[in-house]
Length: 201
Ligand SMILES: Nc1nc2c(ncn2[C@@H]2O[C@H](COP(=O)(O)OP(=O)(O)OP(=O)(O)O)[C@@H](O)[C@H]2O)c(=O)[nH]1
Ligand SMILES: [Mg+2]
Image (cartoon, rainbow, N blue to C red; front, side, top):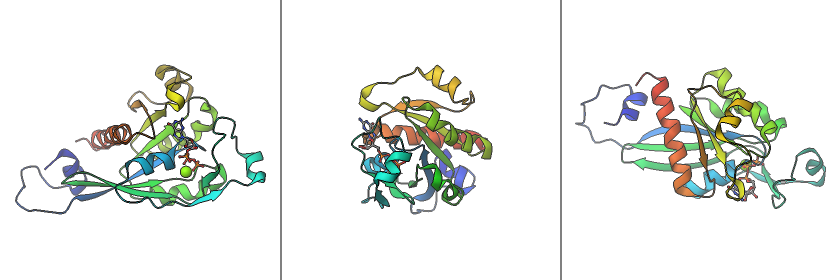
């Protein structure tokens, strides 16, 4: 039995007797507007992801900053859903949040029961990313911060981002590419490790 399985099942190590289906674990993919949440869920999900994309209207385009994502034509209005089997003992169910601030009231429902969250950050727009980091910090939900390297580059160093977003020292900060399956997988495993550490495992 893996340490993660012990964490969520709460059963002692050494009990390998039963053959069980993979343990279902809920994880949230969060972050500000247009940081790559839907992209990340879509790149890793082993099922066709469930999305709730709506066209960005001209009115919304005036409210939401599309400067850095000019090709973005839709936005998530409820949530993304996907899943990935990590190994025979563990299956992650991924819930992506909407990014627009006006849908923030949904976050409490989406994070309910999650072991942790991956907070995606676009380093070109740190101001838009603070609220998501703050949300997880204040609720004491284990999380990791993943800097999405748009166009392969970061505008700020890891340490500068940690300082600017006031990310605690115990919160992992990684660089990833939301379009790359392996990269998203690695970031999710970092969240799992955080959840395990937070549980004292
Ligand atoms: N170059 C580059 N583009 C990316 C990357 N990740 C996402 N994109 C693009 O950035 C835009 C935003 O991606 P989404 O996945 O829709 O972002 P989101 O966080 O789900 O957005 P909301 O749900 O509207 O908050 C899309 O046009 C993606 O194709 C990346 O790593 N590099
Ligand atoms: Mg989205």
